[in-house]
Image 1 (cartoon, rainbow, N blue to C red):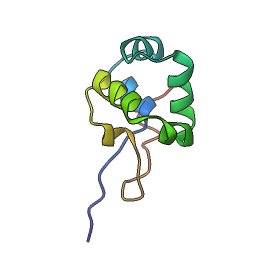
Image 2: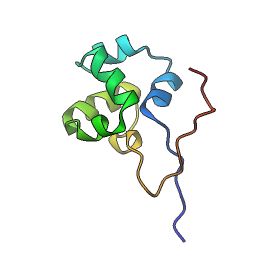
Image 3: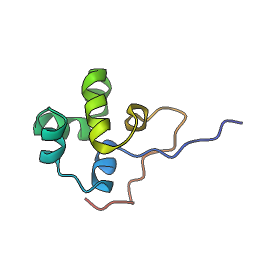
Image 4: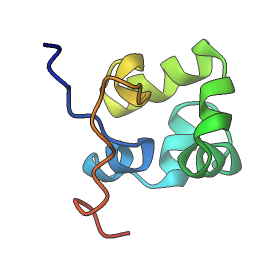
Length: 83
């Protein structure tokens, strides 16, 4: 039996680190609009370049794989953070 790993959305990871969209965008060399799009559109996030996601992951102090949800993970924790 495969054990499921708890995963969080990009927005949840950012909020855990108490980083604003503006700060994440600046530190990861991307735009606020792009970060917003990635947080609200999983398809856009999955189409992003590895290099861009790697920069975001570094700023958040996580691995690239931690940003992506996959079929073997639990559903995102919606009630952990109130937006």
